[in-house]
Length: 159
Length: 232
Image (cartoon, rainbow over all chains, first blue to last red; front, side, top):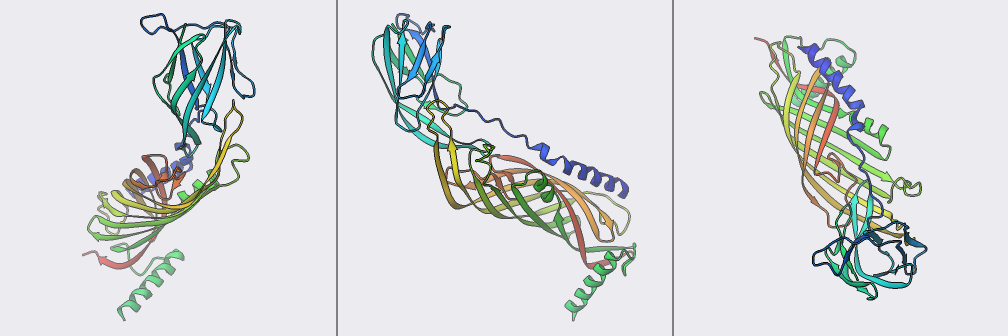
């Protein structure tokens, strides 16, 4: 019986050596401070995705173009600024002939995600201001822009 | 006089055990005493995660047949001050904490050999850790807008309480020297922490993010005998 227990203790020692393998590191997500937006037709009676062709989007005061897409898009991720409480984007539609500006007014809150992933900012969308050239209206569905949440925050209804 | 005799008895037992000699009692005696142990697994963790430094000692005493009272105490420090510069982590962190676990073990190992103190047991623990930690610096990256945000969390004290379910065994290596391991399921009960910083590791509990943790100990223990029972 003692030999059996001794054997079990040795097996336990083997287990000890593999101990760190029991703690897989979590996967950390990046760019989690982006508003998820979708384009919809303002003419449809029910919400229907609208494809916007050859869209390019620029952040006002941003370093470069956010998107310069030659294909059609129906959804966009718009990253929010940490420095100001208003983040603005310019949307030149129809090859730049019709230009709309959209401003997101937000509050931000520091969040600790995990020991492996550290900090990020959670945003609360207070208001969306916009010009009305092509963008007819904007609806805020989910005002919270949170870490690891895949849900649409804002709907753009286009003319 | 009685204390002096007991101390003398402990000293002689320890000396003879270290010399690998048979002690003054024979195999036909069952020995009860205080088992004082050291957890080797804390050293192994340091080998794989250099930012963690921990030490744990334990004491166990038979309170009634099959039942043991157990106390385990230790400390754990975490320090990864230099990983932010190498972009391995997005924040610097330092903590130091002391912990205590108390509880009982029930030995269900049926042994007919008199003098055999080997155990297979299950147990319960209540754990408590008092720790101080800080994030001397953190960075939140903004890939598009470029301006990353930096800040820090000043040192503060917090405490964590948890419960453990234990399964383990131990066997005698040499006279009065035991080795054994235990596997543990740990459930966090309370964490008194109002700041925006979770402990990376709670001493004695494990990863601070987790509500449930699995734990493992591998101990060497010496049983200081204070009572011997002769076989009738």
